[in-house]
Amino acid sequence: MEERNTTGDFLYKNISITWETTITAPNGNIYTDFSDCVIMFQAISFLSLIFALVGMAGNAMVLWLLGFHMLRNAFSVYILNLAVADFLFLCFQFVYCLLFVIHIFYPISIHIPLLCLVVSTFAYLSGLSILSAISIERCLSVMWPIWYHCQRPRHTSAVTCALLWALSLLLSLLHGNACDLLFNDFELFWCPIFDFIMAVWSVTLFVVLCGSSLTLLVRIFCGSQRIPVTRLYVIIVLTVVFFLIFGLPMGVYWLLFQWIGIYYDKICDFYHVTVLLSCVNSCANPIIYFFVGSIRYHRIQRKTLKLVLQRALQDTPEEEAGGKKGSSGESRKLGTL
Image 1 (cartoon, rainbow, N blue to C red):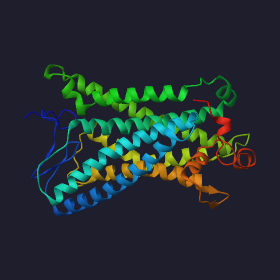
Image 2: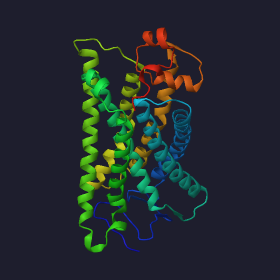
Image 3: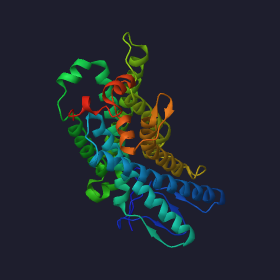
Image 4: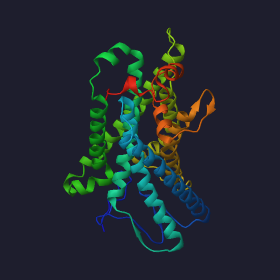
């Protein structure tokens, strides 16, 4: 059994990670049987399992409604793709945590295919990319509204998402988790280069996400002309805030572990804390959509999930939407994919 540890990732030629007398995390950390760490590790795994299950159900509902029961507009395409990324990420985390819970009650050797680790990285990076695209496009629509509504190509959202999915898949395959499978031992010097490209792209997305979101907020609240705050604005702001609080720690951990080579022996459960936080982030997104869509004039109304989601994604002020189009706000924005 061979292994490479140039970037801190443990990769095995049999494409599996085994839990036996020790517990090996996907990033290569090996946790020994310290009682405090094991108890915390088990508690976090149970919580992650619960959040992953709830998040999968919520994102599946969003996928079902947006994919088959609603006409899509420019931003609902992004929301649909973000739900796909969250669902994929939660699926991997659910399987990973479920296997560990099984290991708690039945101490047997458990193998995690390397493909699952690649899918996890792919889904996380895709979610960050799509969220950055949402923030950029909303910022452009506020800064240059005439150009956005008159000159924006019709299928910009779909093309952008397709390119981001393809780029995320390529970077995930070239990342250290799968580099050994793509290059032989004589070409392993390329793997750190691909890891560096992955890190640069991740940092770029984070900077763009923060910059465009901050610009959007400043333009809304401090601009010379008042911009009415719609439900879509609220959803974007809440989604970005939740990602910065709950989703970003996993990305920061990957970068620190990869480039600084920190082994968290004293904080043995830190990686799984970031997993739990990321599960909370992916679980919170559909809750945000339905919660924002269910509020009307500071009151929560009982509506069907389809109407709630339609109202959540409307890009018109509440008064105008209520007076002219009802709650869905579809008639103005449909057809701008």
